[in-house]
Length: 135
Image: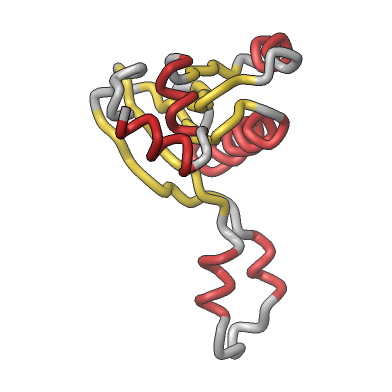
């Protein structure tokens, strides 16, 4: 978000949805509230643009897990908060999996990847980063 690859009018972090599994835990259980929190799903970022929520998953790689989480968050958001306006789905990543980009597009999930030089520096092993900082 710091690189301004995407812009929003308002940002919310760690937005929680779901958690129906907690209904299986008896109310008297000493850790019920903990389980209610743990079983809720967590959207990394909800960005708002012109009144439309953008559900953003942040991952090192835009792969299967990012795609699945985006689709799941979109479903839960519409179920719990209504589908008007329909949430937009996005993953922000260091790199994208070229094999899956058509699948992201098919399901309407936007992918924003870091510029290659930033991604390379970010994903480089620590020793390489330190060596690069001294040259």
